[in-house]
Image (cartoon, chains in turn orange, blue):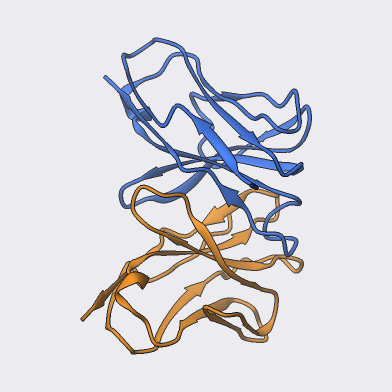
Length: 109
Length: 116
């Protein structure tokens, strides 16, 4: 069963750039990599998705190396409101969805 | 407004008393899924459905049942709940299989179940 691995927690300061890396060694050829953000007592919320190289939207960037065995979510100039749990998600070869255990990001003033 | 609606949001019940958590989406999505979330374990998939009358087991299906008689609804059934099913549950939907398309999942607000 494919799985993802992320750091359990990270701390950073307001205004800094934060990079969270996810390992997904068994990613399938046609799988996308998706990142979600979750605040307490809420459902996960989509942040960004990519297949290869680099993707950027208004809130984040996603870097995916050529072998696609990992991906890095980059949050530019974080604020206190970015304190949340971030999940990396990839598909599995038998169509199940595997979430990582998430990275608890704590932004300090 | 596009949304995934779960009911109830909170439920306290006793071991063995059958319960159903409903999930409904208004986006005409093909794919629906149930997850449970426990401290330190992240989100784990219970069951998923690719379309009407098509369901399959996720990572932790034991003790749960689902049905998909209509595209919009995907109820989660606990026939004989036990305390180890105390958890936070999320329903999600997407237009295609998540991870194999560029269509992300939309999540409900969660249902907190306590089985005494």
